[in-house]
Image 1: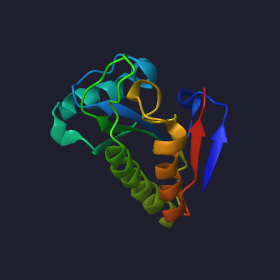
Image 2 (image 1 turned 180 degrees about the horizontal axis):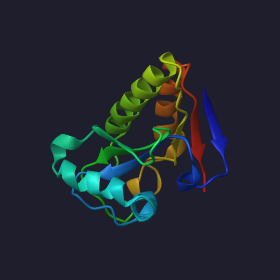
Image 3 (image 1 turned 120 degrees about the vertical axis):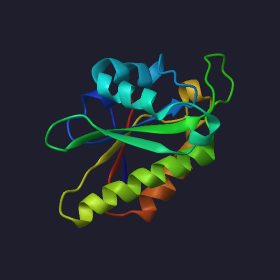
Image 4 (image 1 turned 90 degrees about the horizontal axis):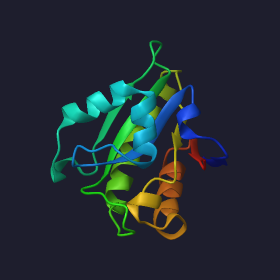
Amino acid sequence: MLHYANQDVTTVEAGVICHGVNCQGKMGSGVAKAIRAKWPSVYEAFLKMGSGADLLGEVDLVGVNNDGSLFVANCYTQVSYGSDGRRYADPEAIRQALTSVAVFADMRWMVGNPLHVYLPEIGAGLGGLDWDTEVKPIVEKIASNWPNVEFTVCRI
């Protein structure tokens, strides 16, 4: 199920927060920068993953509280980065990463500990993709494939 909320993704208190990161070891702008500032452990885990195009499509789930109710998913959605309006995000990498997150959230649901999935308009903005025509259909398809997992797109 896919929902939309006027909410800053960094204000989520329980669930899985997905955000796109590059494969260059940089987390210095956009949502990634905000997440880095709020949860330094997410950035530390990001650095431990290293860099390189082989990370494209991978996910690193980082628990950010003591009770296991909040995770941040570093989704490797683009090899490089920039703020020049070019296309950096890779739709297939977004599909792979969000599918991995859906599988994780669905497994938690099956054991009676469900996690809601939250994400910004991943891949749009600095990633350079169009949300409505390129990314939203991917997210809708994943949400329909995992009906037990609720997805919320945060738009602030």
